[in-house]
Each structure stands twice: as C-alpha cells, then as structure tokens.
Image (tube, rainbow, N blue to C red; front, side):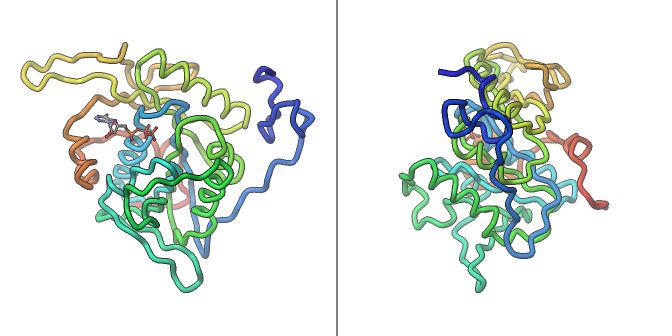
Length: 281
Ligand SMILES: Nc1ncnc2c1ncn2[C@@H]1O[C@H](COP(=O)(O)OP(=O)(O)OP(=O)(O)O)[C@@H](O)[C@H]1O
C-alpha cells in the first residue's frame, strides 16, 4: 500500500487510482439549500468512534446559541445519529419547494439529521458509503437553513466517504478534533489530523473529552483513560481548545433531550477563532 505522502492533496486518492497524484480537479463546492446564508461552517471530527463528537457538537452549539449566535447542526453521522435525541427534536416535513425544513430545538438551534426523516428512531440505515455521502450532501443543498452564523457538522468516525465529501464539497472554515486521553484513541485520531492536512483543511485544535471524573463525595479527580491535558496545551502540534470531564449530569440531560440545560462555559473562545461576518449584540 502507498504511504500517505502519495495521496493527492486535491482528491485524497492514492496514486494507484485514477488520480496521477499531481493536481487534479476536486469536486466543486456546493451551495446551501434555498436562500440559506451560512456565515461559518465548523466540522467536529475524530478518527475514533465514541470519543464524544456529538457531545462536543452539542455543547458548542448550546454555548454559541447562548452567546446570541444563530446556530445549526448538520448531523453527518447518518448511520449513528444522536443529535435529535440529545435536543429532544422530532420528525420534520418537506416544504412546498421540496426543501427540508430543519427541526428547531427549544433554544432555537436548527437541526437536520437522518433520524428526523425516519418513522422510528431505532430504524437502522443500511446504506453503502457513496449513498451515505450523498445524503450528507443533500443535508447541505436541500435544507432550508435560513441565515446562520455557525453551522456545526457532526462527523461520523473514521476517514471515509463522509469526511472526504464534507471537507471537499462544503466550505468548512475549521475542524475541531475530538479525542479521549487514551493513547489508543489519540493514535487513531492522528489519522484524521493527517487526512485534514492532506486535504489542506484548517484545523482549529483538539478537544480532550472524558479527561477525568470528579468524585462527588471527596472531590478527588480520577484520570480514567490516561493523562488529562490542560486547556492551552499542545497535542500533535495543535492547541488543546477544551478539556472536558466525564459528567454524569450531562449524560442524563442527553438521554432526556435536555442538553440545552447543561451548565458549561466550554467553547467560549470559538467566536474569536472563527469570526462570523456580522456584529452580534
Ligand atoms: N464528557 C462526557 N461526560 C459524560 N458522558 C459523555 C461525555 N462525552 C460523551 N459522553 C457519552 O459517551 C457516549 C459517546 O459520546 P458521543 O455519542 O458524543 O460520541 P461520538 O464520538 O459522537 O460517537 P460515534 O463515534 O458513535 O458517533 C454517549 O453516550 C455520550 O452521552
């Protein structure tokens, strides 16, 4: 197998495929649906599954909304969507022009997810990669997002069709990488960092999730999965944007569709890192 230095930076193909490894034409960026005006797109990514991409997406969305921004979430985790349950939102209808209307959470966050289109939330989606990637594209092109300051894209795990499609065809302004402290997780997440580098995407930094748990009785911190970092540290050459503890209250809020009730000030730096194109009062 070729090593990563043989990947084409435009299409991500290996040299042995149709691409020569020199500059090829990547697929064009797509326009968002209807009259949508989306100022900034931030993708939340990780090579590793289950480290907290959806949780980080939800926390970031909740806090950006509290800061007064118009926020949407595109749930690109087509086969394992968890955003609708966390926000307690249900099915959405198509409007007259055939565009999909995003669901709107209690706090006003606009959400599109495959689970909003299924009759039952536990119905499995058994699709091959290209069909899944095409559904993600439609969540960008066929959804009436309206005017948004930030659209957050909750990516599925891995470095396959969906991350490739999102980075190539949606104008992503920055990627937040999520990992747990475990070396095993970091090793896999580094693959996603390399992928973003090959695709010449802008990496904002890391979130270390599940860094520790605090004993509710004595207040002692236990680092269950390895060494907890500090906000501002560097990991794999990137800044650590947030270090999040394991929080059982947060888990309960997610399970009951009340994630917007979470007490946190995480991600308050995001508007400085990715500035929107309007003044927010
Ligand atoms: N900081 C946290 N404190 C407590 N529970 C958490 C935390 N982060 C994530 N969880 C829980 O861990 C599980 C996995 O989190 P989440 O779904 O956000 O991960 P993911 O990376 O998006 O998963 P997938 O790879 O399946 O898409 C969920 O049940 C979530 O509620």
